[in-house]
Length: 69
Image 1 (cartoon, helix red, strand yellow):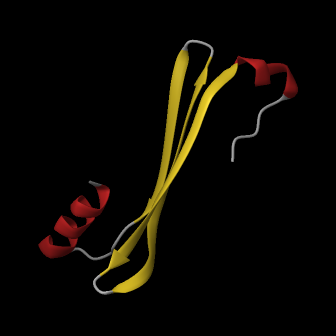
Image 2 (spheres, rainbow, N blue to C red; image 1 turned 120 degrees about the vertical axis):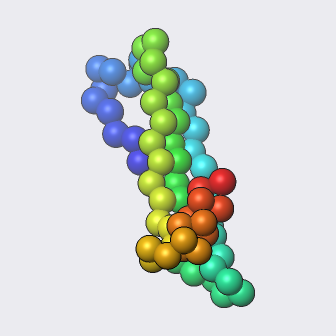
């Protein structure tokens, strides 16, 4: 959600949002991400929030790298 004061709303442009739902193994999980991009005056902002697989083993780290890709 993007919330802005009324006096700056006219300076916001090109708002886009995307979601990615991930499956872990052969079952549907609660993993995924949300991204929001928008322009404000002469700058572009991108925010990403993600929930990835946990763990500290090399296999877990590789799994997270794959999920980010």
